[in-house]
Image 1 (cartoon, helix red, strand yellow):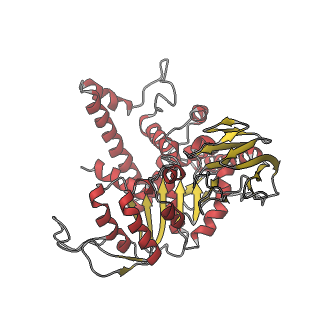
Image 2 (tube, helix red, strand yellow):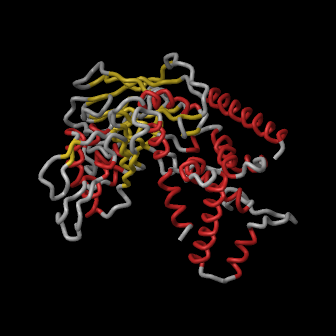
Image 3 (cartoon, one colour):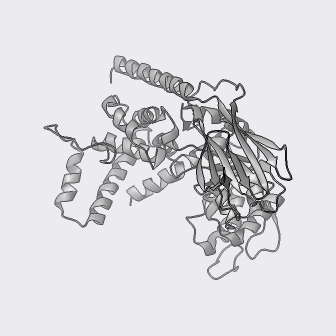
Length: 455
């Protein structure tokens, strides 16, 4: 690539970032909603829902609720209110006695102001109000390795900066593929524990019978197969940060034991007789709706209260206006620095809903860089007499083997992963950490892909 091309790409990238920031600013909403108790034991109590809060407003009798009510007919977590654009979304969290809006029972919907919401013996009036003047959004497009210039992302960055330098526990919520683990790594890397271990424990990746041992460790002979003493992830993360991924899948029987560790800062190995002090900053991530899980009795309220000292909800990619193009160009630059990004695909990328979020977009760009095409659900197949990419011949070769569908799919995926990992490692001189960062996925997931592609 010539210097003129590099300069052009740099200028184009800067224009894109500027456009993304401007678009996000134009879409930023000045509206807010005031929720006030007008009937019941808590008359006069009120709360505001605006775009500044990192998580929705909870209403109920639990101490974890921002609007806490003294009403025996109201559930611990009764309902949730959150701003979506200029609309206020209201969701009943599986309450015992229901949520009624202007006399109609409602499970989930949108309010525009002026409604009366009744729960138990309490009535709430919802009014649209002018939002308080807020601080200008920072003119940045990332927090650590977390990339995004949309208003909803830039609104999070000041909070993330404060959380990074603190030691509080944080619950990171969001759909699959939104970047929860990437945010957790960024919080660790931007904080005082950056030079200490960052350990990830995935509650869905370990058999339920082994979760306790994996978390807290075990002594030799503690159970059948325990042939040696084993340190758990809390001990491995001593001095650093432990991310408990998919915390909503933690078995209910183990939740009080985890709560005890968080309260006492010490673990007791399975089969052990003495406590072991641990100094660990705990982050938790989940794709589940923990408010509903608590209300349903599948997640302990006291554990959630202890974990959610702070809550950050990562928005889905479909709500991150302007970020698709920014992210696509970033992923492309990490994979194909030798050629400019094909701008003609941007309209098709913008029109797609991205149910798999940022992870799906990263995979689509990787496919585009290797195979020369987007997935069919993102863009229609090429028509006319265009020459196929040489990489497409690989697919043709697999198809020519007449394999069953699962075998053919796995073979194409294996070839793609092998080439993808090889290219990234080549671009970064064999440095796995840099290649993982450039891949746009969490380091642990890149290591899994690397190991699978080298079998």
